[in-house]
Amino acid sequence: MNRLDQLLETPPAQKRVVAVAQAADESILKTVSRATAHNLCSFFLFGEAERIEEIAERAGITFGAEVSIVDIPAEEASSGAVQAVSTGKADVLMKGDVDTATLMKQVLHKEYGLSTGKILSHVALFDFPEYDRILFLTDSAMNISPRLKEKAQIIENAVSVAHRSGVPEPKVAALAAVEKVTSSMEATTDAALLAQMNFRNQIKECVVDGPLAFDNAVNEQAASQKGIESPVAGKADILVAPDIEVANVLYKSFVYFAKARVAGMIAGAKAPIVVTSRSDHPETKLLSLALAVQKEEE
Amino acid sequence: MNRLDQLLETPPAQKRVVAVAQAADESILKTVSRATAHNLCSFFLFGEAERIEEIAERAGITFGAEVSIVDIPAEEASSGAVQAVSTGKADVLMKGDVDTATLMKQVLHKEYGLSTGKILSHVALFDFPEYDRILFLTDSAMNISPRLKEKAQIIENAVSVAHRSGVPEPKVAALAAVEKVTSSMEATTDAALLAQMNFRNQIKECVVDGPLAFDNAVNEQAASQKGIESPVAGKADILVAPDIEVANVLYKSFVYFAKARVAGMIAGAKAPIVVTSRSDHPETKLLSLALAVQKEEE
Image (tube, rainbow over all chains, first blue to last red; front, top):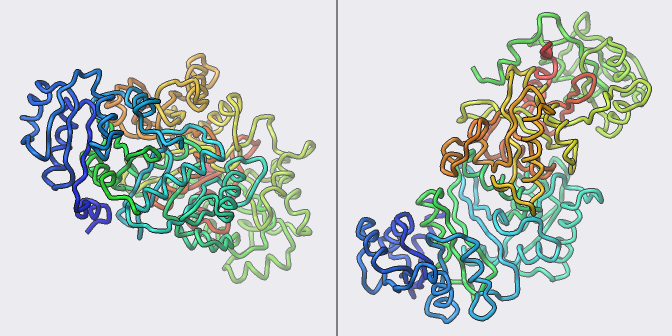
């Protein structure tokens, strides 16, 4: 069995509830339909009931205990879904047919938003046809040029996602172009500082090492050829990129050139947030939901 | 036939001469041996004759018109090889068992160096098992955080390598994390400026577009789903990364996860420079030489 499929096979016994912000969209409702077919979670669909019902019929959705509509004007769907999560009526927030920026404004709302004070970051999980483990990558979507403190939080967010995916003490590689600390390359100095912060227990429940180049991080032979002694080198679980451009090209090269399957979610808020885009593969949308509804480790 | 192999099959009729800086190294001499077996080029091996002869025997090298030694103390091998190129006795410089920094100091030497005043940059050429064309990537090795003017030169250097590889008017994608010009993301603004510089004929003999995310650059379906109208999107020949970290992770993910074959060289000097590292695949070393000895377009 594919390692990502295990997420689909092991939803929590107590079914979790997903609030979809503006569900009147065929691609979203098809994902809802597939998720209920897998018995993965239940849904509150926020949006105009008439529109949702019309599209749901085409998507093959049956309404009932598993899927229900919260009839609300389209422009209030985001705030409604966010409030359902912040009041505990739902466990996971999912973006529907709404701009990410619009949804995030509600997520960060001072009164009823989902912020914990930490930054939000995107965490992706890849399964490759020819690699012996799943790899987490962060942050390809949310933070453009994170500073050191933000990188530490990005790691913590990714570690929490690794935990919910069954990786108890992930090995974290802070990526750079070279494995030597080089004062003219901030990616290397930040990476070294993150390793030391981990050593001082400022970043917990994981083992961080860096700077590591991509090959040193994922290939043991490459690491040993460079003479790198490290508990992380060659066997990283989580790749932390120095900025959004690095994470973004890696994400896309994994999907387009290395034929990886991928799931992703936004971490760092009071609840997991699923933000898929129209161009994502249907399987990615389903796997992302499966990742988000996993019960967090106590 | 593999598309990179074509470089091996088509060396220039007039055989070019490669000057190797400090050739007393088994891995270097094995590459020399393989190159002469392919009738690819001829060599001047700079270094201590006794040491080179000893290792050459193990590498199966026959000395003669194709391969000759220039007996010189090890610490003068770099300057000797560089001067052979600058005086026209050799056409290509190749790094042997010497630090890249040491060799580059000689390459940039004010009196006898190979500088043209333009910056030097690394250009890699990839052939993927399942992609319909070769891809050039720059700059994964030389320039850490190039500014706009340097990026323009990096493109020009890559275009010259594309020309020598038989791609007459390459399509150049300036990479970023998103395809929209976004003032808070310098990768996107530089990319847009490079496109406009190309439009104003400040960057010639190629078509530049950007910003493009990796998927928009290489996959036509991804580009059209985003509604991107562009002569480059989905069919880029050259990927220009915003910085060394982006190019470096892409390079290594291509090699380690997408099973790409790769050749590379440093462009921008008076002559091509081949800098392979000990950990490179033997085939990469040979293909890099084959790339460097191609005759430049007139």
